[in-house]
Length: 468
Image 1 (cartoon, rainbow, N blue to C red):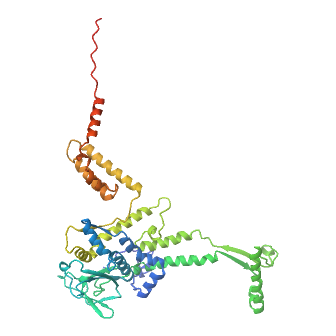
Image 2: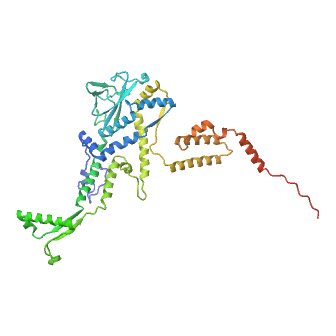
Image 3: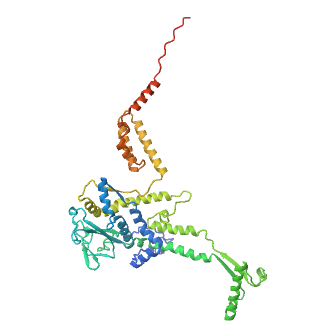
């Protein structure tokens, strides 16, 4: 018995051979490299889908956490003109999204690119340069299928062909992939992915086509229509055709000069109408803007980009959720930074730290800079929420010592410093100390004593008892 995992209705034909959608199948038609490049160079939507996410993932970059002198050394390596890792990661990600793959090649002082790079042997100043290569500029040999190898799934050796062929070991290459191909059985010897434009191709074409068709209607927004009796007979003769053309050309000139059209006829209607009849037809563009926006929203959604970010347009309209969509988008970008980009840059980070400091201190780490910055009003509201929460905890636990005042104060201070709500707070506390550690000055002691004397009740003599 054959069971079909679908709804069937023999009366309406749903799910049967009569159902037209049963013949619908998916097919994969890879887009040619020249067509991908043409899309990126000539279509603004395709370019934005390729460029926006890499730009957002790298624009704020990251913040190293270590001693100030160590951070300066690492950032000096990152920002060196031959390295410039922030810009080159951005370029590599754009190339990967456009063509399906790209690579960063680490140039080391040992001058032996074909040999495995042993991180423990990297010394200060060993990183010389970082080069960006597209998948068309770097080839590779077989894929490493040794499950015990740390390079499992990567090429055994990369090859770069210039004046001479240079072999590069995978330990010196950072690979970027566009849209991953999950079914490895279909492409067992492929280390790259698909172009992101391969996925959004139809959505971009539909959006671009809608704009082109609507733009082509603009010259036809207002059209004059003239009904002429015996037109077919006139067009049979070249002489009368020329005379007709000249006549209406002159009539159109008259209309432009005096805003009127002269036609032959008695102005009657129905059976009494004689001569030519003029009408003017216009196109209503009222629904077209919303139609175009819907097509662009589909294209932006296919590229996983909110429409407000895609069009650089502020959210508008009653009940607009554009701000929420942007926050969710930046949350996704932050997650991709932590889960994808960060691990992918691990080789560079290990080399950069050793090349900057000459050793690998396990205490050195970094955090991705926030992508979404709060407004002044939001920062003030956040500060008030923290302060009210700390005050409530202290109030409820007074005398119970579940959470001491000092612990709450330290935690609140750390949160305020991390969020940057009160700039310079950490330095001020280091200089002056927290409130509970400060000893009162002589002036403060004198003022407190005077206040105590002023508030002390004055003793009055008792009234004598007056006998009745």
